[in-house]
Image (cartoon, rainbow, N blue to C red; front, side, top):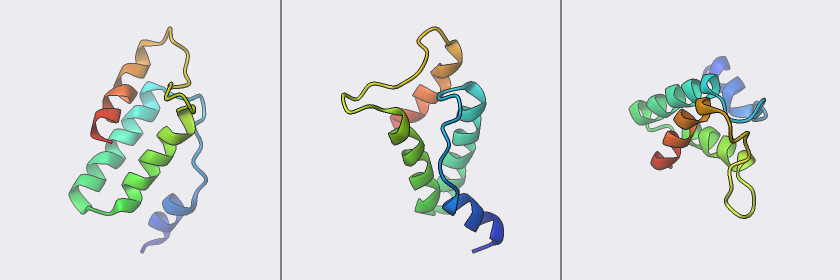
Length: 79
């Protein structure tokens, strides 16, 4: 495992501002890397990100007036 991979796998998942277009682009890139490599660490990171933003009732925690969150929601279909 490279130093970069090690940093990605061990870094605490930060949801920052929650769901956003920029974060969804990053997560989409990780999804594509996972699909190409089959390395489940990438998928685990994505799932961890969403787990931090979904409450016990299954609701996404985000501002409902943001259209930028659509792409983030689309990624949920693959999980």
